[in-house]
Length: 231
Image (tube, rainbow, N blue to C red):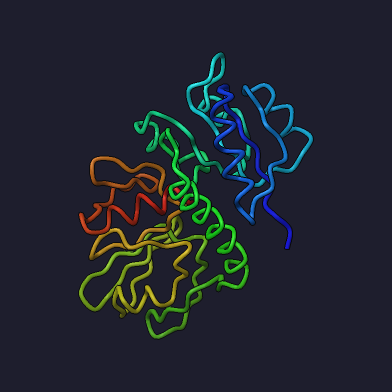
């Protein structure tokens, strides 16, 4: 089986020493480059395929976050940083996880497993349904999953909201959850299911989808935060 190609981007030689040692102990990873600043990393990415970046935040001239913002389609990234406050900002840039220095091997291993789980889900997504079937006004209707913004429940009815139209059908939240792929939808509240890729902002217990602000229940916040970091 082909290994996942990874690079280390960090200005500290000591950090390279630790990560290279850990990567060599990981059967699913292949270290293809060591870069000591963002310029070296940009040059390598321009000409080579990379599946995973181990990226330091606090680098001179161009920081790790500035580097990610420069990439049109960044590879999946694991941040290696001493600053946990960057975690929420990183969700929009393909970050799988963030490791606080000094990095232990068990914590490194957990982050790599999260990355491998993501790559495994990509294969599963290829086999997932593209539409959901609902009955409205006595007719069976196919609604494209890619068009759904969110789903809201009203007792024994649910409202399926898309940019072009809203559908009301006799169903429950649990029934709808069984029909939509878990990789694309997440329950954020006892009354709401959100399309994870349609979430543009998450703060103060609310998510924003287009011009709508939806509440996030306390018991659903941890899963939502993890899902946003993995998308």
